[in-house]
Image (tube, rainbow, N blue to C red):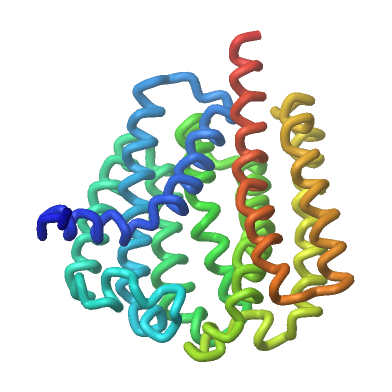
Length: 292
C-alpha cells in the first residue's frame, strides 16, 4: 500500500524535527520544571508547547543548513532535504514558523523563559551550525549550550528567574553531550571524514577522545553531587540518577582502555538514556518535595 503525497510530505516534515532527539530535550525541560518545584498545570502546558515548537523548529532549520553534509554520509543521505523530497527553503521556513510560535508562547510565561529559548536557537544555528561545526572539534561545546537551553527554560518557568542551580543543570547536559556525539562519530568515523566535519576522533584521535569522555563523565557525577549539596534536590535524586551515571563512567573507562570503533556504537546506546534518567531523578525528587 502506497502512502499519499500528503502523508509522505507530513512524514518528511516530522522527520525534520528529529522526534527522538526533540522528545529527550523536551523531557529535560519538563523534568527540570518539576524538579525546580513547579506545580502550576497551566504553566507546564505552556512550557511543553513552547519547547516542543521551539526545539522542533530549531532542529528543522539545522537539518536544512546541514543538507550538504548529510548528502555525503550514508547514515544521513536519505533525510528529506538531501534526498530531495523537501527543498532547503521549505525546511527553513517550516522550522522558522515553528520556532516563532514557540518563542512567542515562551514569552507569555516570562522573559527568562523567552531568553533561554532564544539562547538555544542562537547557539544551535548561528554559533554551532553556521560558525563552528565545520571549523573545530570544539563545536559540540557550543552545541551543548543549545542542548542545555530547554532545561534553563524549565527552571525559569518554575522559579521566574535563572539561578545557580539552573546553570549546574545546564552543565549536566553540556558534559553529557560529548559522549553522546563522540561515540557515534567514532563508529561512523569514515562518514565524518568524507564530509570533512572536524569531529574530535578525527582531529585528536580515538584514544584521546575516549579519555576526554571519561573526564566529562567524572564531572557529570560531580555536578549531581553538587546539586544535592546546595539543594533543592534530595536523596531521591541521587538514588535515581547516580547508579546509571556511575555505570556509564565504568563502561567509558573500560572503553578508554581499549577503544575500538566497532564497540563505540554500544557505548552510544548506553549513553543515550543517561541524561533522561538524571532528569527523571530531578522530576521525581521535586514531585516528592511538593507532596511532603
